[in-house]
Length: 170
Image 1 (tube, helix red, strand yellow):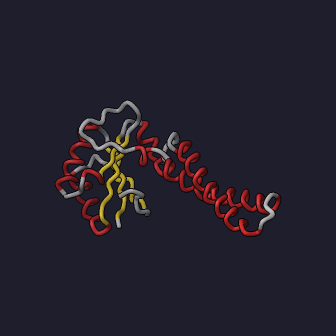
Image 2 (cartoon, helix red, strand yellow):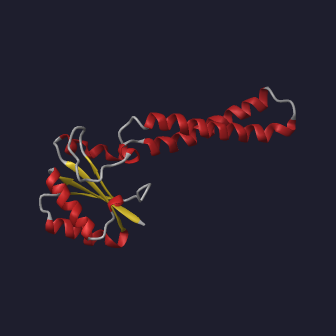
Image 3 (cartoon, helix red, strand yellow):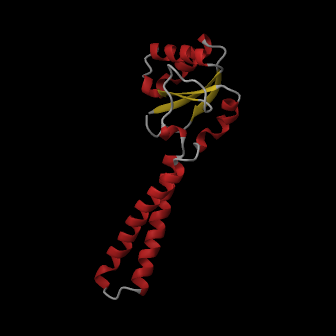
């Protein structure tokens, strides 16, 4: 199980130094993510991908559930008012739920891909100031050692806490 650590780094050079120290501490580059306001140079840093920048995953999950519910209701209405053969009632309701879930996940993920990540909303003022948000996914047993390492070697970096949930894509 992994935990996500958040740090606010003042500039690009400092972010590179922190990333180098994390790599020396055997944190793989794929577990280090950087995010800043649009137009900030990010050379030498592992930038966040679309799944971390946007609300795509959350929106797809929500759309899946709501689409399945609406599809189930639509299937039930078809059974209630259209179908006369009792053999197809369960298949119609389940098929409606499946089609609704797929359509709901697809449509809502398209919307979610254009919306900033809601879990990172409270970091936006820091990024607007020009700081770089550094997200590090570490094994649970390494959390304290990594926090100590970053705090001791980089006093300019602000510790912004730990995400209590496991990252979606570790």
